[in-house]
Image (tube, one colour):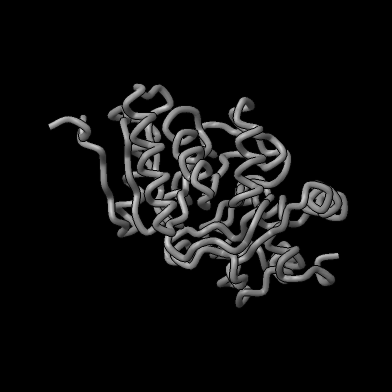
Length: 265
């Protein structure tokens, strides 16, 4: 079946294979001259010649049709009004293409017409009332100025940032650390529905993938990578927001923080 796949379908399959991350997918694509269907149609001998491709992943590539019913996946995506956006598509964020391990594709719900300039706002899941107020304030002011607000849909600061943008009719993107059929945290389901109506929900993870310790850092690199700047509002010294900040620094993004109380003289 691989020979009959489109580039988009093949990239979707590659992105769903367990143990095959975006860096290894890029190695595969380089080896096969960018031809994603060829990666899935390759023989065991051809796959053994790809640098950094271990035996387990080789076997997964050879047996992908037994593990994934692509037709059913596409039916589920259609039912949930989900598309798979690849780098050739206009909706794929331009600045995300420049990071060293961009996602091969993004599962996408909502509008593809987003502002060209994005600012990420992230912070702790256990914020103070002041932190929540600042997140909403920055998000609403920036959204009114025409920026798209990007965050990770987490409890606390992320949630406040999304709500701040929505409150003024602005655009916001929720980058999810799970498949778009498994919303985490569950209490943000209604928020996500509102985001999809006004902005977009995106994920590099296929349907069925639940959030775990591996998916959150991968999500964080996208939050930073698709934004021109990152604002951190309250964070633990070793929290997920600091991981996002590190990605932003490595990716050459503008990095800002709220340095304590800014509403007092």
